[in-house]
Length: 391
Image (cartoon, rainbow, N blue to C red; front, top):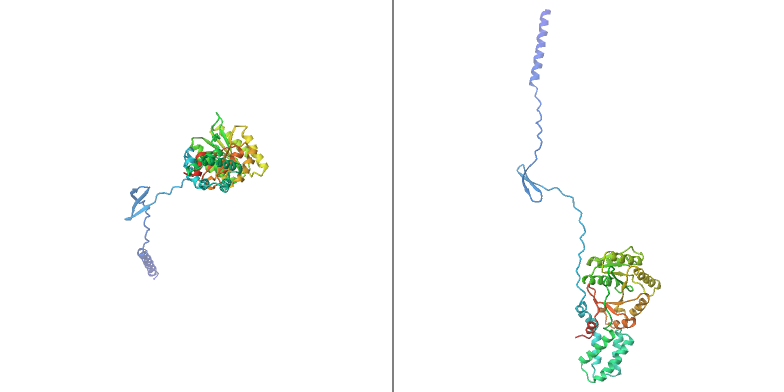
């Protein structure tokens, strides 16, 4: 009996192992992950100008932009250097502009002198016309007396004869024999020095820039000194003029000693072998004695290095007799050698040319006849008188 039990247990054990083996065989297997394939770079099929590549990818065209390059710094553009026209004949070219403002004076005088009968009232009207034009009282009386004498001698007269008489008298008062040469030529190894003076508002700094432009147009090498240190705008304005025509500007900070700026400008002019140094001074009120003394100091300091060849006094022609008072005060502070009359095209009071020369004994050398850069012209008495009288 015990033997049958043992056999039964053995059979049971074999059956259990058999069933377990079948279960292991029937269990589903796990899938293995597919191998990872690294992505391939797209094939370049075309290379276009500018570095842009065109590639084929899965039958679709893809454009790859070129790499962005860092922006390079852009230098500011250099100022354009202008080539000014020469100053010769400039007043002739500007004659029409002068005539527009002065012809009323000439025509009025011609009409008065062409009357059939010249009584005392007519001569009073002639005197009034001349005085209104700022000819001045003394020159007016001299002209009127001379005209009276000449008219009596002529007796009957036509308009052409009257025009000839008036032209002769105007020229005599303006004095065409005065030396109007602008002394801007260097002396050996030293440049000519031009000092520009005048009160505020006369166009002094603009005149300095225009004069530099005219000299460069005549073939001169010019250096500018910005000695108006009371206004930063004056130095900036002069710098702009210099850059336009290629003239270097010596300047210092606002409030610096004007005499120091003038001295440095002349020193640099000598070193750089320029032809002309033009020094722009502050627009000083003629009532300020201290400032006028300072102007004298500027001139004395310059003379330690070079000769001051010209002291040009800039006057506004529209100010009339007030300009005369300014001229007298400046003449006492520095030795004025020439007058620059600005805005002469904007006034009918061209007679100030006569009065200012008579009072100072100094010739008008330059006139401003407009706002343009080339509207500064050497003064020509005959062109001026002809413009007044018309053709």
